[in-house]
Amino acid sequence: MESFNIYKKGIDLQFIIDECKNKGRVRHMKKGERLERIGEPSQWIGYVKSGYLMYVVHNHVDGKAYKVGFVFEGELVADYPNCLYGDPSDVDIVAGKDCTLSVIKGASIQTMFKEKPDLLNIGKEIGEGLFRQVYIRLLDFYRTDASTRYKQLLQRCPNIVQQLPLQEIASYLNVTPVTVSKIRKELLG
Image (cartoon, rainbow, N blue to C red):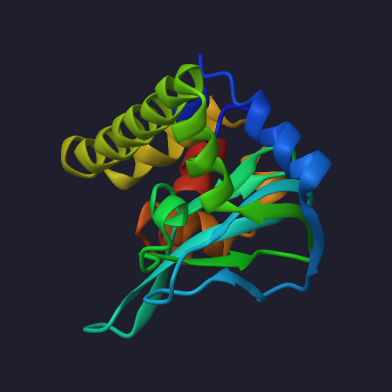
């Protein structure tokens, strides 16, 4: 889904994709299996060959897990930049359905950044792009309502409703599935 992860717009990620495809280990994951766990050393960068993965955080006050991002077929998945340094993961990265990845150690990309100065700028661009994406998402939680966020998501990713279950879309928007159902009825009505 090309327009979901807008951070990558204008960034040439092909060298990382090639590293994953050419030197990576193929990993088949079942729905619910974790690539990374919160608090454990983050270490993987993967190219998603099929399926999708979710970035999940846990709220220990309300006891709920929230989907804060998704990665689809043809995209890279990682807890960036933690995976470059082996720092503790800030998210669980979980298979949303059975999927196949080609994974490499994030440290190998960090080594490439150090050895090839021309690639270092790409690492910086990835970080800046991710910051922009998260910053806009944060601001939208304050400057828009759930209905507007849902409509924006549909504008950006018209096929998202075919890719993700209602519960996952609702979690991403930080609303209940009932709220998303009501918004959908209003849009159709």
